[in-house]
Length: 152
Image 1 (tube, rainbow, N blue to C red):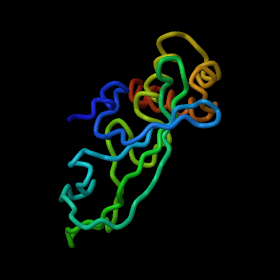
Image 2 (image 1 turned 135 degrees about the vertical axis):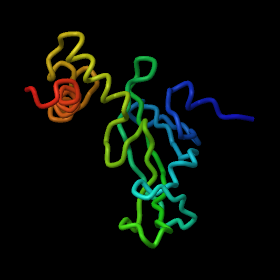
Image 3 (image 1 turned 60 degrees about the vertical axis):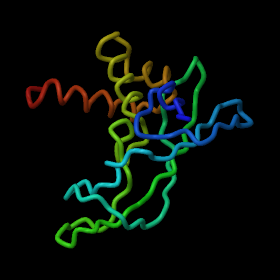
Image 4 (image 1 turned 45 degrees about the horizontal axis):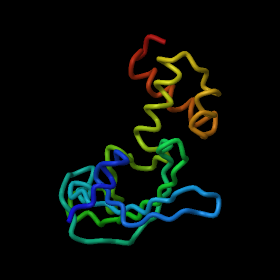
């Protein structure tokens, strides 16, 4: 039997292992990593076999079916097994949930598109997806830098 819930929510590389509805009526999805390349060191790309400890993050994501949805991602911190590598440990990361990011890639993309393509202000976009103004501004600025380069 396969778990198609991540496909329903558009989350690649994770598996939903539980769903709870909190007191504030916000569904909370419990995620674990199911992507083998996430176990590879980001510097030397060697696959690790030595877990270090578990880490839990709560990245923000887009609303689902018009409702804010919370994520709890339990991921591993691994030890790099390559003795020549400068990185000793690393946590699992995915393209849809980058390392050290509090937002999923699709939420960050949505903020950027709302500002750049639909003419909303950064403040309006932040309110629409319930993030702070600095978070929305950082998402938009990073996208603008990629498009405009050094010209601005």
